[in-house]
Length: 374
Ligand code: NI
Image 1 (cartoon, rainbow, N blue to C red):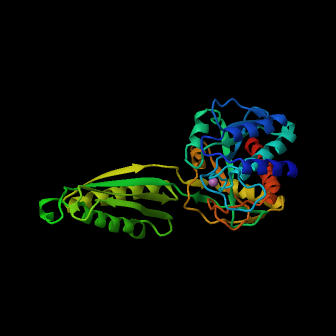
Image 2 (cartoon, rainbow, N blue to C red):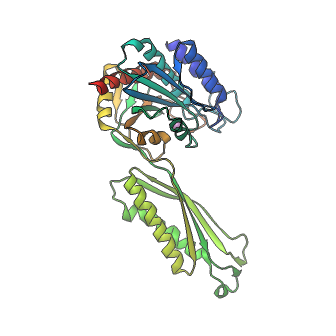
């Protein structure tokens, strides 16, 4: 099994594909699953797949992997380095796909003794936050009672599993403020309405939202990442723009930050005689782990000889939260060593972590079905 998984992992790493372009990856995974007698569901999607193992009836739980790569030029010395220039599995989704494939094969070997059905999701386009929505839109996950996923974690060595109860990954929203003034000659500011002082006031005001208005024990971030106004030295521009992101670990903090930003933008702009147009685009929701599932997972992990650690929460988002709107679940951190962060060109995932992780997800899936039956 380990040899097979490492072979799959190397193939996937050598052939990374960007979000929504995971054609070869899908074909390859399909072939390996079918060759091993695993039943695949008809998703109607161009990329990604769902395998089904077990009775075909309830209860149903889902194991989820993502399969897309990133537009990054790989800078490792791996013998199985990416063969596609400018594209790399720098977030370990090749590891996730291999690990859940391993879990699927292990479960296939115990199929007749399963207390229900395990759906194994190979999801496209996690990096652009549309893949989970696509999988959900197939309707094939409506009967799932529990969703389980894992993510590579370079800060724990192989053989370690990170488990954290409650919020583990944040939401990720985008905001844009367009400040409308009135352009004029820079020599005659009194004849126009300069949007730049309003821009400055809004930047300062936004910095106070997390520090002054959010409970210090609730994690949240407001980052302004782009400001734009004017294009030369002797013209007061007509408009100014500012853009950025909001991250929060709970829906209530997320909503209250949105409200405060809009209020500060509108009122500050008005104080300077301008008008502010506030746009807010909601991205993935926070990932909030089910506490009971975390407790049971820790028992399974220890029984399998994994070192269980509490991983810190992260301000990075994950569209796994989309599934958690259907049913509870959890995201676990798989220690994969390497020492370079996810999305870094030197990111690597230790293949020796594959089989223990596959065993963990297969065993947890099997036990959770029993737990749902009893
Ligand atoms: Ni990722």
